[in-house]
Amino acid sequence: MTRIKFFKEESLPLEMHKVRIVQKLNLLPIEQRLKAINEAGNNTFLLKNRDVYLDMLTDSGTNAMSDRQLAAMMMADDSYAGSETYYRLEQAVFKFFNKSYFLPAHQGRACEHILAKTLVKPGDVVPMNYHFTTTKTHIELCGGSVIEVFKDEAVKITSEEPFKGDIDLDKLKKVIEEVGRDHIPFVRIEMGTNLIGGQPVSVGNIEEVKALCDAYNIPLMIDASLLTDNLYFNKVREESCKDLSIQEIAHRISACADIIYFSARKLGSAKGGGIVLADKDLYDKMKTLIPVYEGFLTYGGMSTREMEATAIGLEEATDIDMISHGPEFIAEFSRILQSYGIPVVTPSGGLGLHINAREFVSHIKGEEYQAASLAAAIYIVSGARGMERGTVSETKNPDGSEHIASCELVRLALPRRVFTLSQIRYLADRLAWLYENRHLIGGLKFTEEPEVMRFFIGRLAPVSDWQEKLVAKFKEDFGDSL
Ligand SMILES: *Cc1c(COP(=O)(O)O)cnc(C)c1O
Image (cartoon, rainbow, N blue to C red; front, side, top):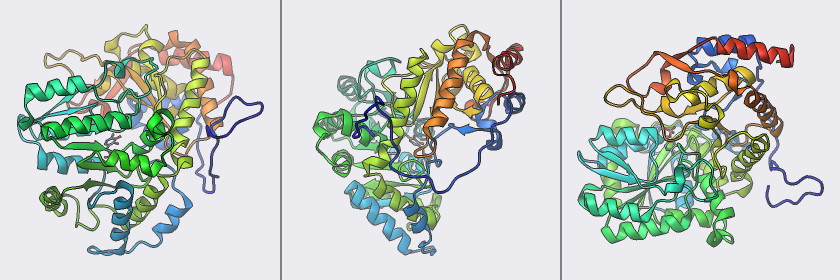
């Protein structure tokens, strides 16, 4: 915690919780890790969790739960309609966002489905700071398209810009003027841009975007899935938030939004999601879709136990001790890796640590998937699984050639309150060894390539015997060590 000063230590991210339930982990010998990654088609999505030591694939549904959340789950009132649990969740949502209408849904992308279906017409354009995979797909399935209006700094790997997720107001204004407000159903701001390093958006920028939207009478939508990290970064990086409580910062943000939605798999540290609205007309328009696609209006596809946990999770999202844990662990992880000379995205953001694969394995061609190759190598040498966020996550060009991604990253997600500092230091140490031996890492090629979202279930193979050579060098240096 930044609020604590040390005597000998420079600074340490200090946990304000203790661990009371544990799950045993496996760290397989390296030969078995090599076998596991090849059985998984060199795609970390396809690894079995029993073969993984540190599961850093995602933070979706993997945050640790608190004793209060588990206790609340026992109070769940299981009725299809009108359950007490629903009203407790509704009250928690109203309090957290300071708004009056709520529609429950089973997860974040389900909210996107309902919102796109209600608001997006063929030919519409949705400006946003950065897209998320499922958001973009839902908008496109309704015949719309996405235009990104991020600041140039957003996609620079190393930067000093504290809020790389901010919208560029000039770009936004230009898009509105060119497209016309009638073809813009809403402007979307994603808190803590997922695909470019969990980078935050400043409250000041959100307020300016709202003023611009108001001038053109366009609704502003906020994707609050990664809001906790964003609240933390505004508290420590935004001058005008310094003296505000976390709840007050959340209210300043939500006051700008006409529409908010969130994944309770992230915000809420449980499973579920929901849409929060200020306007009754919009609520009435959408509410009929909830029983069709999600479930009755008082559960929306969520289990009552998860709804109870989400209600407490929202309350805990106003606690600086809770929300600082992720960003401060990521910053410490980043600091250690930078001290080893390993290229990472700076400043460090929320959600996870992002390695710049384009520089780490610059000898591999873009067409042989730098980030995917590095993600496979990281699993082999450490047992940790991250996620490729680069060319494999893109869709190919219409002529069949590769669309080389603007950033080629490996993301090591840090689900909140899950990993310890020694686990992070272990992984940083293995990454240092891998960086020193990076010339041994080779490329990958597809053996099975789905046409849609190939990154989820596509299978790849190494282009040479580089993985055997990597294992041989590891054994030479580490002997029988796991
Ligand atoms: C994860 C995520 C979603 C989707 O949420 P799910 O509950 O996983 O469907 C939407 N937006 C952002 C920014 C996310 O990070």
